[in-house]
Length: 401
Image (cartoon, rainbow, N blue to C red):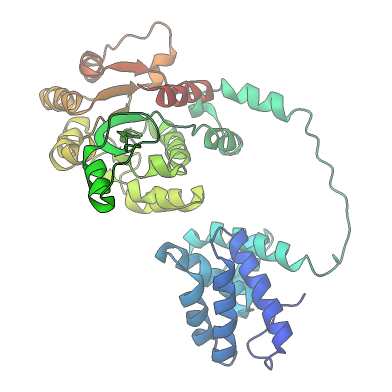
């Protein structure tokens, strides 16, 4: 089915609704949540606005189809792709075809979104027309499972970019049901628990009669807050990248996302928690790259922990929070400051877990001064260097630290 052009005469009503239906289906495949009622409203708006002015049509459709501000960038790119913006379509071709030189005006952070939208729109348009060429694609999957098993024991630092992309799907599946803790707040129970006297008296006051059934209440349960402190120095950069993938996998669980806080520790402290509100990992990593200017630029653990304890600790480490400190402990600057701040961090957090890739060695001893300080104050130590160790971490988080 050929997509309509805004420069062409307005199509018939039936053709217009068909075009809009395919456009909305492409948006849904791209990750936007659009219900049937929004589609009906969009059709009415489209008939009123018409196809004469592209900007008016885009704004009108966005007003009825979008529910979140974060989806606006995705919608705008989908609109330009579907309604045949020639310049943007040429930039997309320059992006996809390796033999062509991409235009300098194409922003690098739009590449992943454009590729994903192109796939969705191509799949949507392909439902109504026969492919121009037919060819067979044979894929040998006989070694896929064994390849992943081999990568489970490979150190993250020795993996290539392609190998990290291969284990990314396995990391995304590690977000299991989190451990739930009992809070001091009450909620209405089903059949068990103590009697809710306030609700019982309110019910009796309204009915003016005896009621044999008495309302019950029970304690609320929720996942404890989880705080991740990532060392992004040169020796920890590769492991921190993998932990960003793990954080994104955890953030896909709405219960965990509400209380997940991620910070990077380099020459400065950066809060990157909001970067994981995106559904797609490429968008989250792109936002982290924009927020963190000191990646692999060295680290000052003592001063970074001091800033965290002063600005954020009391806000994010309350209510039984678990804190994951991902670092190798190679600190040589102000050891007295690091000693005091690590002790304060351990006191504020319900549990402080030290994730150290050097623990993969059987004979490892914390000989560095910073490592000795961490070893003295943390509650638990865990190696974090391959997929097996990451699976052990996920099991620990799901069962409770």
